[in-house]
Length: 154
Image (cartoon, rainbow, N blue to C red; front, top):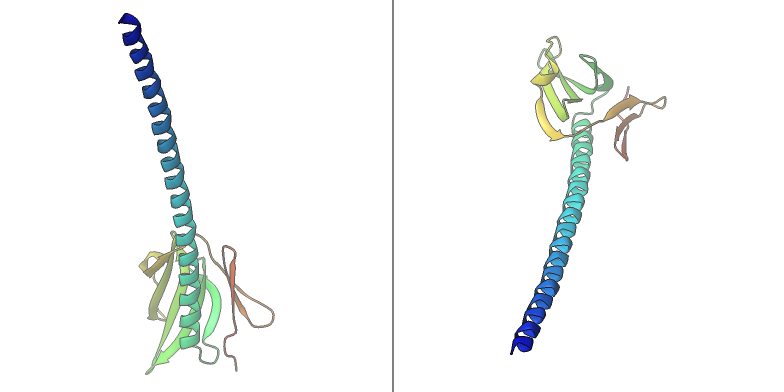
């Protein structure tokens, strides 16, 4: 009887070892799957934010594209796109720029000055560049994406 009991103990230990290896394998696969899902989700979110930021800028420029209304410059030392318009007798300026990891928009009277943190947050963006080319195009670069705008001129 002792031999039979010893054999059952060995069988039990063997089953527990196999079960433990299986449980660890399942846990490793779940952890790997969660990591892959997180990475895919982060990449997707970054792509959506890039697309949204570029679409937002394109829409703003196209909606307010009067003659010589669109320009590139610096807003308190920060690169920005400016949209100028006149309402009644007052000149207004919309500044679109990146500050503190956000794409911001600030609409104000052209003569007034504001700090960069006064703008309205649009979406989180790390880095975006605005550049006016020799051909009169405005180039907006964000990550691997690039947007070329042709504002109306006189």
